[in-house]
Amino acid sequence: MLDKRSALSYTLSTGLILSQQQYSTESPQMSTSLNKSQQRDIAKILVNGISLGDDYMARGLSAMYRSARKTSQQDEILALALAYKVVSNPEFIVGNRCAYI
Image (cartoon, rainbow, N blue to C red; front, side, top):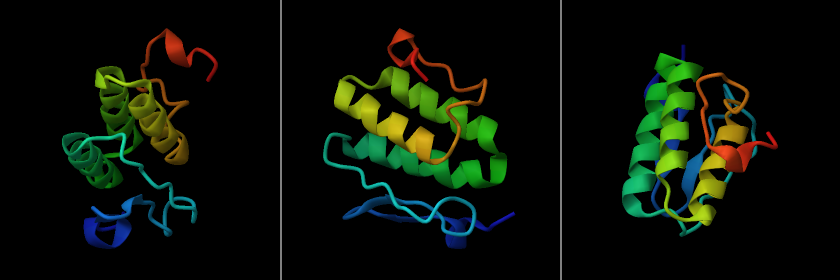
């Protein structure tokens, strides 16, 4: 397992950066459609998901997806779920909008 500090870097100016050791080398950038509390919650989910596993990350991101008010926020959360490869996880439960996945 990777420790939390070396596995995930979070900066407020650039958004979330994927760990190059465990995930892909491309870093998805979050735009301004997510509010500060959503960015903070997603950062906690991703940091804790490294040690707790993909089920935790899938549950957390799907809860954030379902609670998002705007479709642009849902799109960004879905992009993170795709980047972390938890969309195919059975714990990633979303509504009818993502039936194409």
